[in-house]
Image 1 (cartoon, helix red, strand yellow):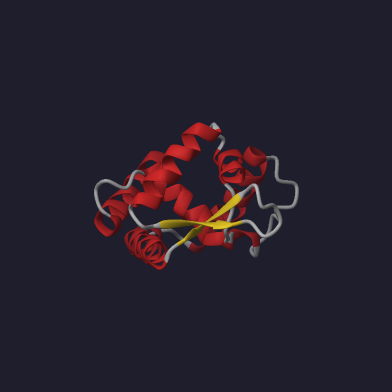
Image 2 (cartoon, helix red, strand yellow; image 1 turned 90 degrees about the horizontal axis):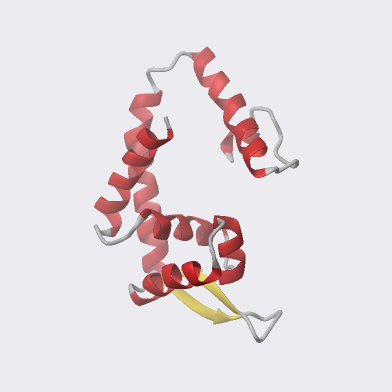
Length: 142
């Protein structure tokens, strides 16, 4: 199931952000859409090495999607944040992917949708060891 969903998302990313934006880079944009973060934090969240994350970030900086700013809490660190261009490209790709997925999800019955709303947060919690995930209808929006 996941490869099918990722194929739709990858198509949206390529259409909106350009063919040279990779899915790993898109995932970094998604994390930075939440808030500014250090490369170390991003590497931990994506479960990649710091050099790998550094290369992903550098490519995004060079394309103008991400900028580096001083970390006010630690002058030795830099925070990474989306630029206006990066946020725009990320949001457009996300909207396009959702528009492509909506008609497919519309074919599900109410019972099937409820099952998905319950199962996805539970699966996320199990796979990430996130004990704070709530297993109810509100958590499905995460």
